[in-house]
Image (tube, rainbow, N blue to C red; front, side, top):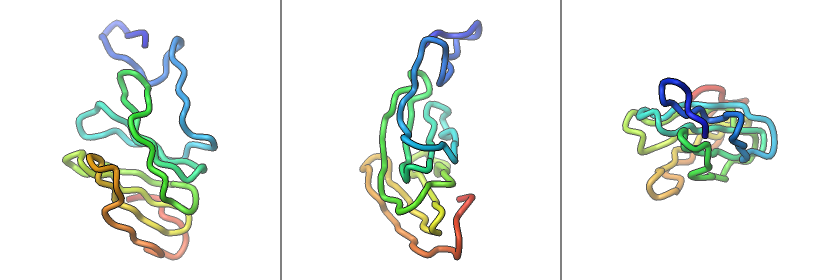
Length: 113
């Protein structure tokens, strides 16, 4: 990606194309270290991106409806995601596995985790 005057590389720049979600983007958050972004979308996916390149690092597919909320743990080792069905999932990023499923965590959708 083309860096700005301060040496930063935005996720999307004129010379970068970012592809990942196949439907609307509904949630986004930075990792604690600032090197990654996690997104959730209408396509039921959670995607982790490398900020410096805009490339997909990890794609997590376990939700039964659109993902409306994503949040990293303070250490950055885990990622929580919530969806429109009320399901919340906590992912271990090093293992790329769901560590905890909370189905029907709420009646209706989850909009913050």
